[in-house]
Image (cartoon, rainbow, N blue to C red; front, side):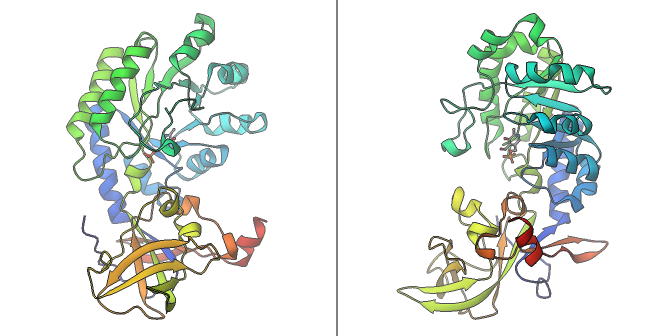
Length: 385
Ligand SMILES: Cc1ncc(COP(=O)(O)O)c(C=O)c1O
């Protein structure tokens, strides 16, 4: 993918995340077309993207949100106002009343968790559809950090545990099964996972009202096989007479935003180095965690262009390095660099390590243009400590 933008970032504060609603809408249109073709419901996983000022737009296309905690559930309820689903590996007693207030679906990690909260759910005045997260023990994710089906995983109930703990009575009130076994993957992977899920849990699937395919579907990425996804969804709907849910995060916000930063200083120590006002560890932690090297508009690989630099931050962490890049012109104090694909898993994971300020947040849409919607300062740093 070639990264370009017609937006003028020069007047923005720095650093600043930018969400381009036109790019978000492009993703949402693809997701909506899957909903329309299949009748499946697609939810935004807010763990990936919680920039709630865009939720009214997201809500025009998707069926709601899926959340990982009380706070995410509340944000989805208050700011989008459509379906709210929640899954957590375990729920806190003192959160649960509020979780029930905000949620339409609650997914439990185990039958034990379901039994613990069952009475409270059944006594609650509103109907809440409950499900169990199953662990098919099959995934094609290489890194254990992102593999919910790795051996000894805490994520979901294996068939052995399901059969051990479940009786007709315990399953009474359970309306759905949820699995999440993918990470940035295609429909061919989904097809293979579904085969395992059906082999193992097929008999239970016939008793359910819905099956949730989790996240990790790279639906909006170029080359994704949408036809195969559609046939996977239809196969499950028709075989088990269930409603199908998908809850992508990344696919909603992929390539829909930027992080604008500025060079603070340059130096040389065996390589030219530029020190930026943004930080991998504070503002784009997945660069270090995944790890990966983000694209910068107008930059090339090292030595591809005339001037190669290592980009680091002003923090004390020696490894707080974004990567080596080359540029047509030498970098100097005040040069602006724009990192791509920074809408997802960046704002939601950022932090103020070293007291580094959080980037502002700007949103572009055709009606309002490019507007800064959030700025942060000392009080935001202090309040967390
Ligand atoms: C249960 C669950 N659902 C949905 C998602 C969203 O995944 P992605 O952003 O990769 O689509 C995740 C990510 O970890 C998850 O754990």
